[in-house]
Image 1 (spheres, one colour):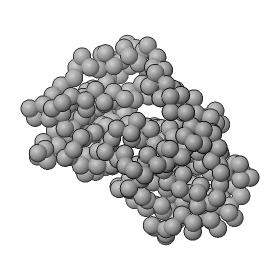
Image 2 (cartoon, helix red, strand yellow):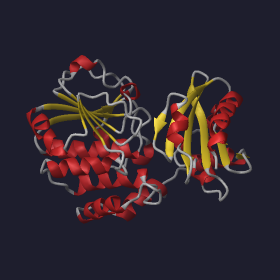
Image 3 (cartoon, helix red, strand yellow):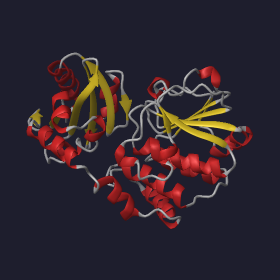
Length: 323
């Protein structure tokens, strides 16, 4: 197993691989899909037989990305591949059913920036200092001397934008802005990416937000903000899980709130919890208590049982670490 390897060391591995599959986690987001498509275009341009295959379909808000219509989803892969590259996925199980049996892959390269990554690959590139996996993929393409064209730049720029909250979160550092500048020079258009991500919201998504915001609750003297989405809300508005994208920013934007929580149905009576913090609380540690993970300021986990039980468990874990 290789960890902390120099990206240039991957040249022989990727160079000799003819058939390559790229995948990312279930319920994919802008980082997983943006970095994956950027890598897909680069490897295809280098003459590789490459496929991008994941369990779930591309969310509507990311279908503007060039090549998104080429991403496969659904049935598990059954074709042998020389190399499987997983992106933005901290645990092998979070890939879902898309990858099929591990014996199909000659080598597994795990590229991620989550501190909770379990280093499940044959080779592991885990850079927790990277603002997004798109930043790591950019560096990989530089190490492999692969060109970055307009399509690649757009995909990688979207990865950076979504994981830094449009360069507003604490993971926005000098390096993130330097990479973004290079991608813009290569053809990424910030206004177009912003419009596609944040100014193309369907009416039903706003109706869902209105219902959820009507039930916004606060705990710990306003230091915790909670927003809940239910199956009934989905049914009333004709929406689904992908329409909850961005909802957690509402409680997070409240001046007194340090930790924001979004709870939504996860099927089978379980609840998916998204956690965000501003300054002091490491929500990755909170999520890990429930089998989840993520970053210091953005993490997630799943809780079984009733809604009230899920809320109680989260509050019990968060309140003691609030300053």
